[in-house]
Length: 128
Image 1 (cartoon, rainbow, N blue to C red):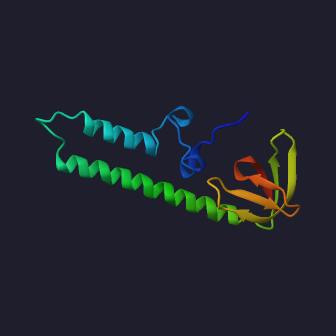
Image 2: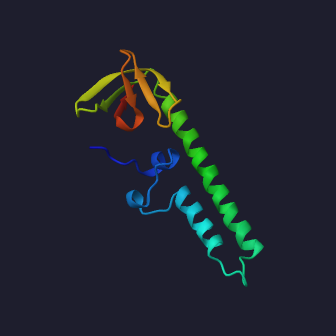
Image 3: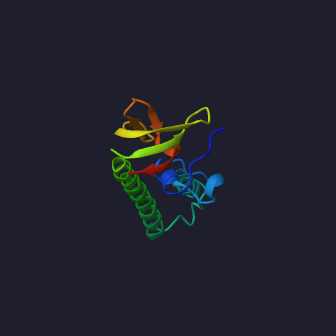
C-alpha cells in the first residue's frame, strides 16, 4: 500500500495533489490559467496587468518548489554517517548507517553501508 507524500516533501517532488492536501499544485495552477485564457470573452479580454500578475504567481510557485527541492537535498546530505530506520517494501524495518545519498532520481534515495537502497520517504527515524 503506497502512501501519497504530503507537505514540503510532496511539493518539492511535484507530487502535490488536490486530494492529498486540499491545495492546488503547480499543474493545477497552470491548467486554470490556460482555461481562463481559452474561455475569456473576446470582447473583454484579460487585462495585461492581470495576466502579468498571474504569470508572476506561477513563477513564484515554481521558485518555491525549486527551493524546497534544495532544502530536501541539504537535509538528506546531512544524514550521511548517521543511523536510520526505515520501512521496507514488505513492511519490515530496515536499519543501517547511511553511506551515501542518490539525488539522480525524482525522489531522493539513501544508500546504506550494506548497499541497501532506501527511499527517503520510507525513513522514519534518524539517530547519531
